[in-house]
Every structure is written in structure tokens, then in C-alpha cells.
Length: 222
Image (tube, rainbow, N blue to C red; front, side):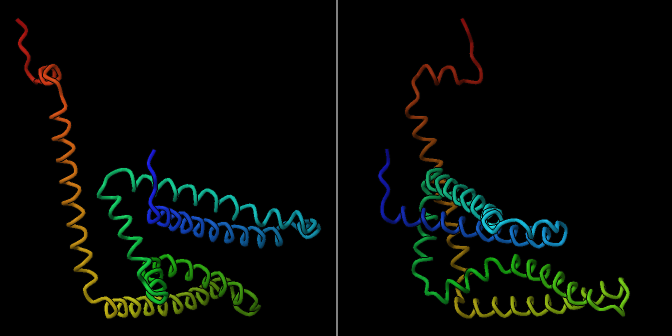
């Protein structure tokens, strides 16, 4: 049985809460889309009692939150106990995150998830613009599609410019970030290679003479 340090417990909680948050967001999106679809396709949905509709709404977020938190916890355990190099990297990442200010954390989160944000916003803007333009009775179907796509593209261009500005700001905020990242990668590779070599030497020294004889490629039986 291994006793966890306070730092390891905090790192595990960080990974778990991060996974739970992602699962909750995905669950709320599924519930929102499902409720909107149910209102338009199933008129009897409005007759359901509030207790039933509330249970239906909170079920996807609850399930996905627990699943995502469990998966994040298992992923953290795999990282921590697969090798010493991975364990050090996970703890260093957590220490680096704790040392950041709230502003730096927000910039880092936006930078790490900027493409997901752009894709989700593009899809949402396309759907929203279609909902608005579809109310126009004068335009034809193809015209509405083109118009909705133009609005979505305009919003996407703005998001891409914002992402470029965010990258420039992050580069200005941490000018040596890429150099340090490359250095950390090489250090991880060297630590991993050293650990593998030590494990190999340990396995060789603990083998008996009988095991060594049996492991020979060519054996000559008298």
C-alpha cells in the first residue's frame, strides 16, 4: 500500500475535477439539444410534470460527469504509476498550474482549447443564424443557406483573429515558453531512457544462471 502525499492528492483532485467539468458540459449540451428537439417533435412533452422533465434534464449531465471523472482518475493513476518520469511530469504540470495567476490560467485554458471553442462557436453560429434567417418568408431555401453560412463564416473569421491575438499575447507573456517546452521534452525523454536502462540492468542482475542458460539463442545439448 502506497501512502499518497498532499501534492499527489491535489494533483489527482485537479485531474478528476477537470474531467468532471468536461463531462458536465457535454451532458448539459446533450440535455439542451434533446429538450429543444422534444419540444418541436413531441407535443405531449409539454404535458409531462416538472419532476419528470427535471429528472430527464439532469440525467445526462449526472451520468457523464461521473463517467468523465472516473476516466480522468484512471488516467491520472496510469500516468502516475506507469513510470517515474511520467509521475514527475504530472506533478510538475500541477505545480506549474498552481503557480499561475487567475489571468494566466484563463489564457492557458483558452489557448489549449481554442480550436474546440472555434468549432463549437462556428456550429452554434451556423445554427443560430439559420434559425433567424429561416423566419424570412421572402428568401428561398438556397438563399437562406448561403446567408446563414456567410454569417457563420464572418463570426469564424473573428474567432480566428481572436485566436491569433491570443497566441501573440501568450507569446509576449511567455517569450521563452517554446524553448522551455522543448527542453522539458528532452529531459523527459532522457529520464525515461535512463529509467528503462536501470530496469533492464536490474532484470539482468537478478536473473539466475539457469535463466541465462535457457535464454541463449543457441543451445547445444550433449
